[in-house]
Length: 275
Image (cartoon, rainbow, N blue to C red):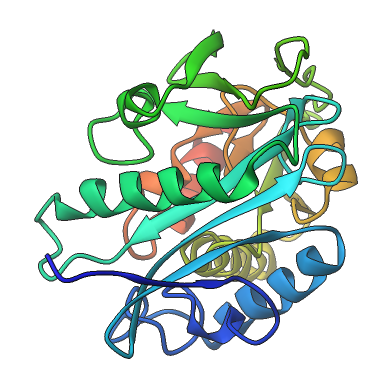
């Protein structure tokens, strides 16, 4: 693999991130134009302490790693004095190749070295998944799981200072159940990720269109998960930055393809029957 060049993640390099408009992650993909929100979100987060590294192969931006102080990070983690690993990603040459894991390991390692003792430690969310933010990758870099909920583990890497282990923030959000014959729809997404923006806005528009066909039967509420305050107010486990609940029951929105939300909601309305 070619040698990496790393530059600080700041206002001058935000536009080079692979998941922002024009980046390798989104090139050629049918994302909505609103994915420009990813850039605006990071500018706002930089004001709140976001920092990290952008990785280049030659002149081509290929990856990044980002971190925030726990006190301002929009993650459901309680870790005073610590940093929170927000996201890290490398775009491989071929989508199905797992070379990104080696590069992502390098990026997280470089971030840890750069942090020194800036924080008491670094908290992160590790997934029980072989290629998507795997907990095993973090364990190889010295992180240890301190709490696990479903497919997510809260990982902890002390940085030379004495500090208590971090913890998950408590659940604060209770999905709604509507009156008989009506479907309560709770939909949330985050502007941090183009996939979340695209799926969240597409689902919202599908549901709004259905509302004109089924007047008075769909009670839709949407929730942003962009700031720490919003994250803690909408905290659910296992946590994710995109979720959909229908009368209190979770729907697998992130796994749905195309316009799948509409038919699902129509089926739920049929199940409910007439009011």
